[in-house]
Length: 400
Image (cartoon, rainbow, N blue to C red):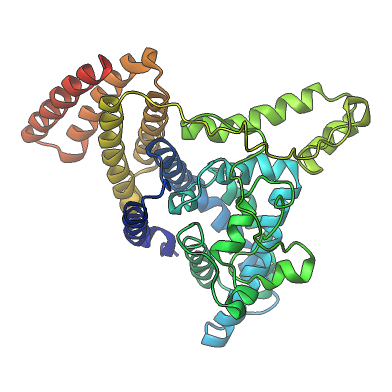
């Protein structure tokens, strides 16, 4: 049950991102922005790290329902896995659609994925830290049917892996038969558009037949404007997850009447009572005035943040591949350091120089982590070299 095809596919993800960067270079297109891509991947790190902590609970819930509530015990054969693949995609469609049409799910489980104003493969990694907690509830009927947790988790992982490659502008339209049956980059670009005609369309995972069957399909026409109707305007992955929940909480507090508060949570995003103006439709995008959020520091600080982010990414990958070796206390400490790091680096990418002293503290913590992980006298030397090297680099970058 420790097998996770999504984590095992991490090297493939970054290989494809590299190819997309080569495509950008050849075509001289502006597909990636460093600040946005770092934020996207940071959200992916946050999602995987938090899933390592409480994903056990959601998997445990599935296993509990399977052991004590399953009507059958379905064997693991090729044809049962094929049926399971179709069923997983079906229930994914309904979770995905619900996470757009139920305000509580939108703000806790999904909005993070749509916050980027770019569209490239790094956006596929931009996932909510809380989505897995709620999505499992939609898959419990599969446990009742008798599909094992191992089979379910494997097929669900493959479903998510498929969805990675559709987050690109490098691929235009595919053959008509493929576009009709499967989810494609063209279909998913529509899904990420904030244009009113594109909102809440194309919820498919792999099979576009669900959207065609249930009336949520929309073909790509004009180029979408990506992002959400209320831009998040932050590169901090932790705050990107928290801010929508804060906004929703404030909206509930400001809405009069108990049942109106309940409706704010469970009706569509944009709903509010008539006395407050009624349902707020998504506005048309004024392309003459629209500008992407694009705050960034000077190039020396960008280079520093980029290098630190690569180190954090490497450490997070190590944590995800070896987490079963650690006690809960050590896992919490390592996860906390990772979350602190991606938040801190996101803040520095917003050119908030008042947070530079906090980065020196994080470098000290990084040195302590090196000593803990490596151990022995040599670890102090490595930690010292690390601290001096990046401390000097940070000082130089902060003067730019």
